[in-house]
Length: 102
Image (cartoon, rainbow, N blue to C red; front, side, top):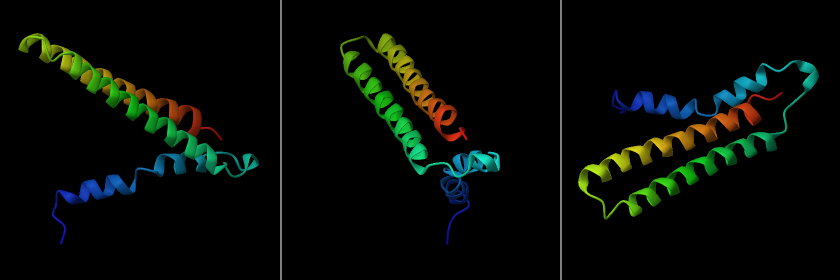
């Protein structure tokens, strides 16, 4: 039996691919079916954004090892914000240029 905390995670996992399906359902019928390769390319853009953001964050942590604690924590917080910014940019690029196009 699933706990109450697992239900939102399962619902989120089921709805992950629904934005692209919703976006293609809003296209007029004269555009026809969207090529599945477009959605694959969009997910590749998302994956590249996540990979680049993670590499950026690990690089920043490695470069900050010799710093003092206070300045290192500031650099790590800024690095994590940069990582989230790159991740968000990958999602935005994928949704605008691939998923929401008819």
